[in-house]
Length: 490
Image 1 (spheres, rainbow, N blue to C red):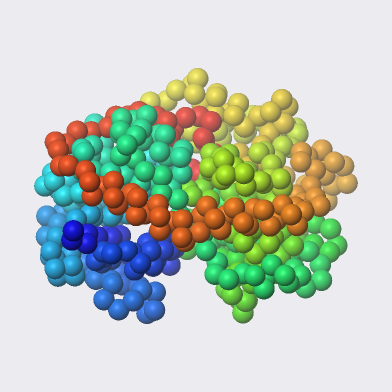
Image 2: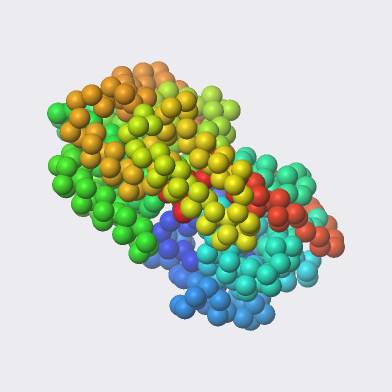
């Protein structure tokens, strides 16, 4: 039997989460009896892949102006030509990443054309345009949907026996199946988690004297940097806090500069962008901390919940049950996480907060061509409340600023928050080692290789058939539920 040919497709191979996934896939495929090629619009740095594995397709990259600009038919031809040149023939399977994102609207149209031609597709979705990316969604609606959600869904999410999907968490799998994709064609393909050999880091004591609380993140808005500074405002004399990377987008940088200014004004014990200045490799940087922190209000796969344990460090901060639920099923324990950071309602102007929720949620609905809904708007407000308390992560940056400024100088206020502390005694060594062992077994490169092989086998065995579509409105409605609304994601 002939070895299969696999083409992996992504817009670019710049440093980031999807690029890391593709690197793990390439490493896995080197051990498969197959031929594979990575097709990308932006070639990676030297050494990221082996010679001959990566091939450029200019039309894949994000256009220089706007998100349109590339011809879908030209992209299809370029993809097929590049694949045939790299593999000797058309691929048996096209493994395409994030085609629905909307950064280059030629790609979903090219994918739809390949589906119409009966090509076997594995469409791996890391980020949904329906999930807090209204500008992307509007561009897709204009360039592809012609103003019709039904037409857009048909183009973005073709349903056919030869079109399969891969997702990185069970929440997304459930949403796609509820919208009409067959369960047999939506595959849970978790990311590989690998920091190399960390045995020496496990044995080493954590860092210099004092307690370093490290937030390994690129500080975009949804990472909820204000909550990290909230805890820094309550720091003890031995405590220090640090983040690793600055955001790159202009909008995120505006808020980031404001947080840096606040930390400086309040003299908070925080170092920003330690990942840019340290000489330590990333695993060693993690191991230098007393604990790793996450305060994010939204994640895709949730790598930050797993990597700390590989270097024997506990995790503190905000839980995201939609994400960590997958990990907890494998008996990974997160004893240091809280579901909400609750502050008394009288710490802020509730009338102002309600007005911000109404404005923000109404604007979000409008951006997705949904009418204003007063009942759902009130539900979005109520989702932030527990009795007479408010979840700090539901506030916007301006309200968070005010709370932190008051908290830093108050004697009474720290006793009124729940939970009362970010970090307690930390996980016991048996718990640390148990989590590490499970993560290496369930999410290590070997397990990822097995999962990938199984998914490819399922796709390869499928027969070509007629195209149908999912219920795009149902998918969008599930992403727009009031309970999912955060001002930090507007």
